[in-house]
Image (cartoon, rainbow, N blue to C red; front, top):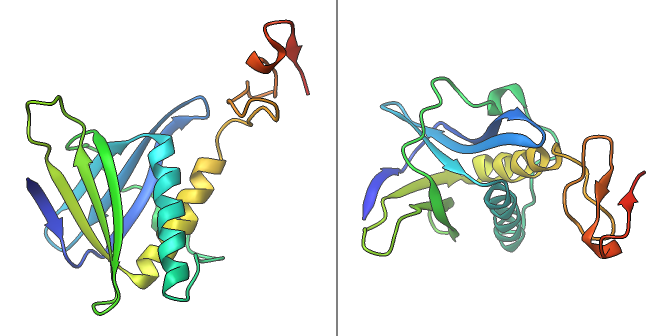
Length: 168
């Protein structure tokens, strides 16, 4: 069930609160009447960035290389309506709009709420680049297993079969 649809938002962003290793991620959109924030996982933000980049390539465009990072900040209050389970992205080339569909994570009996955001091409360009950047601001990843390491780069890597720490 579509809980909310923003056909012409003036602000679309992804962001986080907290510090690397303890961050909480959000997607936020705002139009002239309301601001909507939903809780997402870091991987969902990364996936959103990748999907938007792929769709931008289909319409012969690419994510922005420079944008106003301050303008992409989350706006207060950050009060999420729901936790996102599914993320879908599409493009309507005739309207020049990118659809970001965020469906609530629910148990099997409940109908998930949905937030639909129709971003213009410039918003999609900035969101793709910004989302990729904020995901990359996290902890370094292990070159052997791909899992996050401690901020100093150390961790016990499962690829060493439990036989030692990997320190860089």
